[in-house]
Image 1 (cartoon, helix red, strand yellow):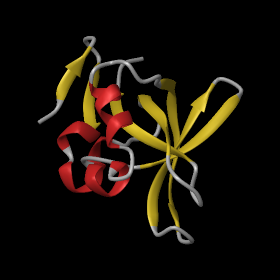
Image 2 (cartoon, one colour):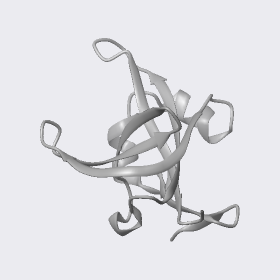
Image 3 (cartoon, one colour):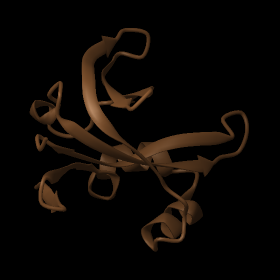
Length: 118
């Protein structure tokens, strides 16, 4: 179920609600995940307009590109695919969890909001 964020953005992905994906992603970082859930773990926000939808064959993932002014970033599409529309606004919340070697720092998308407001 999508949750309204402000009046024009809809929460389309929330890692807290996606148990299967969450267990794969944060299985080695339970203490850090708990800190995130309590609001005690730093998160970063990337916000802009969806500028491109594409398939990344090397990873086998459907992606979207976010234009954040002069900067562009790419993210895996999570949640209901029909929300991802070129020109729509998107806000991606992401955190970095620290795992044992060989991976070390693992960036994780925790929530995505999308809206069609101008």
